[in-house]
Image (tube, rainbow, N blue to C red; front, side, top):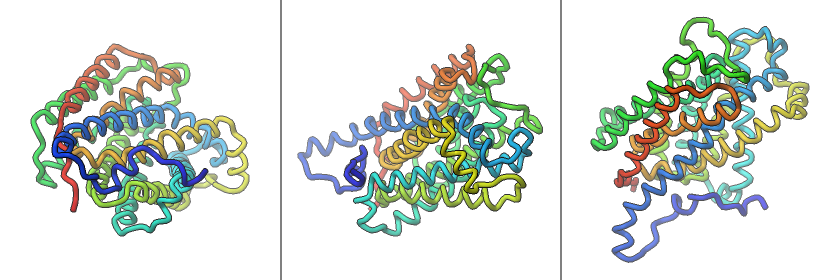
Length: 359
C-alpha cells in the first residue's frame, strides 16, 4: 500500500544515531563509507542504464510532441527534450510521493524545501544539457563526460570550501581522468546498428553541451552534500523531483518552438506508445525514484570528492548497457578505459573518512 514501503537508507539518514557501545561507535566511521560507496555504485548502475534508453525514449517522445519530428530544428528538439524531462520527473515525483506518503505528511522544514529546490534547479539544468547533447554523441561518450565532476568537485571542495582532500582521493581522481580520456577518445568504429546519433551543426556541440552539464552536476553534488546534512532525505528528494519537473516544463513551454505541443492528442499518443511506455517506466522507477533517493540518502555520508570518484563508474555501466542495446560497439580503448575507472573506484573505496555532519 502507498506510504507503507520503506526505501533503504531512509531511517539511517534521517534518524538520530542510536546509542551503543564505545567499540561500535568507534568502528562505525570505518563501516559507513564502505556501505555508502557500494550504494552509490548501484546508483551508477541505474544511471548507466539510462544513457542508451534515453535515446530511445526521446526519439519516441518526439513522434508525439513534435509535429515534424524528422525535419525538426534544433530549437524544436531542445523544447522537446525539456518537456521530456518535465514529464519524466513529474511522474517520478508523483510515484515517490505516493511511496513515501507517511514521511511527506510530517511537515517540511526550510532545509527540505530550499535544499530540494536548489538541488532540483541544478539537476534540471544538468539533465537538459545532457539529454540534448545525447542527440549528437554516443551514450558512452555522454556518460564519460558526465563523469567530469570527478575533476571539478575536488577542486571546488579544496578551493571554494577550503576542505582538505586526501592524497589517496587525488590519486583516484588522476586515475579516473585517465580512464575518462581513454573512454571518450574518438572511435568511429563504435557506431552500431541501433546508434541514434546524428551529425552536429558544428563540431563537438554534443560534447560541449555535455561538459556544461557536467559542470552543473558538480554544483548539484556540492549542494546535495551541503543540504543533505540537515534536510530529511525523503522530503528533499521529493522536492528535488518536483522542482526538476516544474522547471523543465517551464523551459519547454517557454521556448518559442513552432510545432512542439504537449496537448491532449500528444498525451494520448504517448500513453499508447509501447516504446514510450517501457522506456519511461524504467527511467522513472529505476533511474529516477530509486537511484535519486539512494543518492540523497547516502552521498552525504562521504565527502564530495569521494562521491565524485565513485560516480566515475557511471560511464562504465553506461557503456555496458549501450553495448547490450546495440547503440555502439566495444573497442579496445573502451575496455582499457573501463579497467582504469574500476581501479580508481577500488582506490577510493578504501578511504575511511566520514564527511562531517552538520549540527
